[in-house]
Image (cartoon, rainbow, N blue to C red):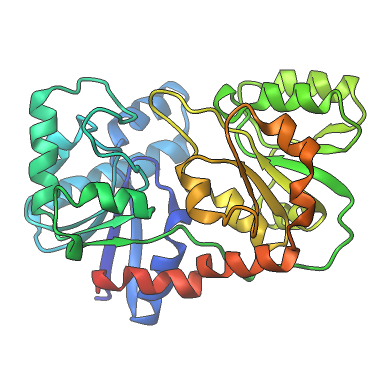
Length: 339
């Protein structure tokens, strides 16, 4: 039987584990993905009569149950900080070797995304969990520093998300698109401000993605010829779009429970030579060297940044060079502790 390592995540974010998968395959180890929110999605599958979703959730439920009757499995757990569901999950994980994987940077027990049912008991369970697990993989250095109050720094490593160089690379295409946005079309991404700014400019703005503000985006696109909306695109299509674009914009807005973290869009676009202009949240600050491999700006200052045109001084070659540290071949080394 082939040796296995398991990823147990709320949503099954498989693309976050490309580097881990590569490392394990090189060591003849198989990686399997499971989702712990299986009851929620099992109900959803029944309501929507979605057979494929139902079948996947049955598989997820059976795996979680199997943890009760086995031991010493290596499980990479991806769960939001202080999520109350850990109280239940820990019973299934007690006999196994747990490696916690998190992109959340703040560990002050005050600032965290999922606040439902959080109380003193939940906080206590989380503290005990963090102190007892095998290892922690943090997506940012900032997160690693904050986690050191729970576990010794020798048991924490920074493991950035990674991109596939076979898909994302500079193809030396004509960069006919001035500015690009790729991502969810939601308020937190600063979409409305972005649209308003470009409704008063002449440069092209290409928007890629889906979300609750889709109709607003379509309305602007119908009124202003320089604003173009093309919906959702797959990885290969995105690579072509990045290669045809000069600048990528991330205009995110911080809320009480969210800010822009370590975005795949940034590293993938940079690998294609698309120069990033991003808000100075935790994620972009970890990726971009301000003034060298991109531009970082304070919230609300995008209009001024575009007018100052400092981003025109950034060299494509420097952006691509910076992106190389996030290639799968480099990030896979950071997962080695799991072996």
